[in-house]
Each structure stands twice: as structure tokens, then as C-alpha cells.
Length: 110
Image (cartoon, rainbow, N blue to C red; front, side, top):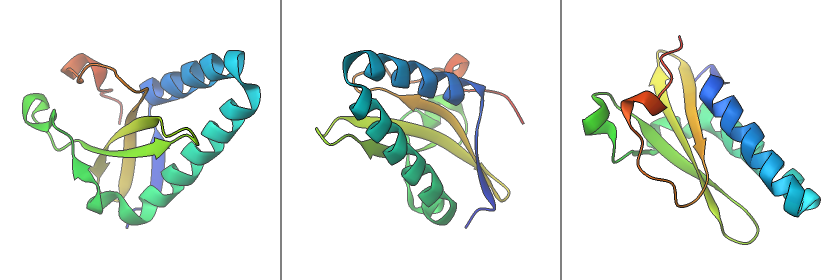
């Protein structure tokens, strides 16, 4: 169990970009996506340790985990995070179909 879930700068930017893109196409869908994302982020306080280790972990040299938030149409948005002490640090929120992460895609914020 973690004390808090914190979105780092790349994740905040990702969330805004995805929300803006969805809003241009279907405003109600964008709101529903954002609400579902917030629910999943809140759930990470209790289940972050149980989420899968991301495929990129070995290449990145640290344990990076992932979970997903889905739209009502089944599109999966990937939430990429690390666990540090009692904090879940969300590094990225990724739209479907994006390439694997590189070191430069992971925020070094503390």
C-alpha cells in the first residue's frame, strides 16, 4: 500500500494531450476517459505492487510497472509508474499503439 500517487510532469502532459485529443472528437467521451483514469490512479494506492513489471524495465535499468485504464470502447491507455518508498510515481500515460519507452521517456523527477 502506498501513501500517495503522484503524476510527474510527463504524465501530466500526456494526460492533457490525450484529453484534448479526445475532447475534439467526443467531449463526453473525454470526460468519461478522464474519470476512469482518475479511478484507476486512486486504485494504485492499494494495488501498485500487484501490477505487472513493464517489458522495458530491463532496458531502463529499474523496475518500471504498468497498468491500464480502458475506455468504454475497449481502448487501453497504459499507465507507467515506479514505486519509491511509500509513493507511486506515475511517469507516463500512454495512448494505444505507441512504441516502447526509452530512458528519455521516463521523468527523473523526485
